[in-house]
Image 1 (tube, rainbow, N blue to C red):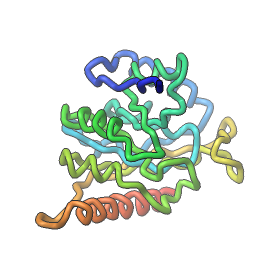
Image 2 (cartoon, helix red, strand yellow):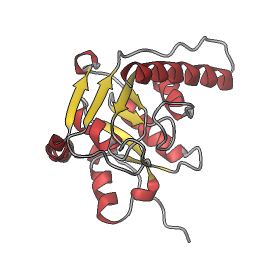
Image 3 (cartoon, rainbow, N blue to C red):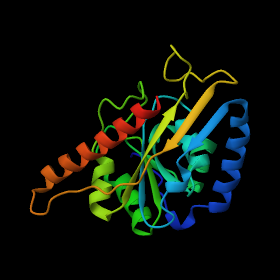
Image 4 (tube, rainbow, N blue to C red):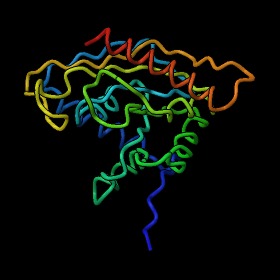
Length: 216
């Protein structure tokens, strides 16, 4: 029998632990020349879906550590093993099976948003060049279901130049996290569900790709 995957309980996620972890991550990041842009425009309340490009190992911890509000990221379920997995669950991070539509992960993320929280998504689905050539539909589905605002995030310099997606930049390298202007997805009423999802995904893709291009 397959063991059930641990499920996020947003009510049990520890903001205090998240704050302590964020301070540790920021301390480690002092070895780099980090610039954080756009925090002032971040919505101070209400549901928000963060959509970020993804090219390096540091992207998730970095965005989570510097975001103005605590985000609950969709994180690949492969890393939910042992102590790291237990820590991620206590931090309110959401395990996701990238090989399926993963309704359990989307339901957990929807619960966070309906409570007025922040969910983080790497809509490319995996680490790549970070140029956002294509995106998946999960972020758009969450926005259509909850009416959340979308904040695009550009992560620049989080992998070593010319090396693989699993590489880390050298100490002293410059990194940038740029939060963009929040926007709402416009999906015309009366349009069939699949077409609304396609249109919403296209809008998110365009905003994120343009925002990343402006900072690369």
